[in-house]
Picture 1 (cartoon, rainbow, N blue to C red):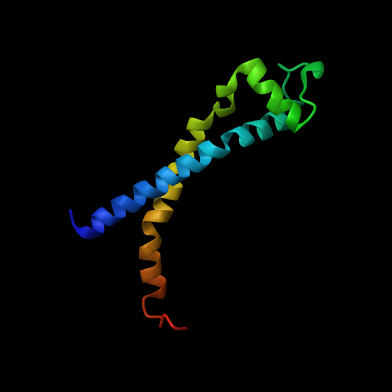
Picture 2: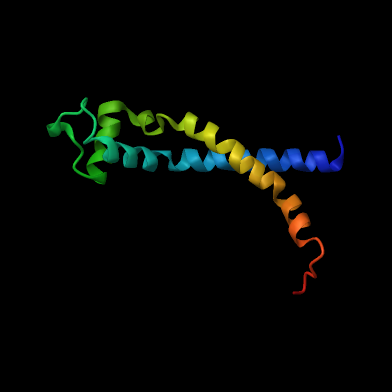
Amino acid sequence: MTDAAVSFAKDFLAGGVAAAISKTAVAPIERVKLLLQVQHASKQISADKHYKGIIDCVVRIPREQGVLSFWRGNLANVIRYFPTQALNFAFKDKYKQIFLGGVDKRT
């Protein structure tokens, strides 16, 4: 493999892994947001079981569904986000070269 190919592969993996870590880190916040948004439209949740707010949701989720339920659906989110960020990060140097190739760096 050439140096450029190795560099591209490293950047691709670095971007993808960073995306996976960031999505996994914010997954609990995303889960709470989604549950609060869809609870009124869901026929499976009776009106007396609706979450009263963010804190109520954060407290009840681990008690009723377990702590790992905060990350339910995270794999699909990571699979969706990984290639986007991996390609963005891998092509960043190529974009710089294309768009800024002839530009004086002092300007």
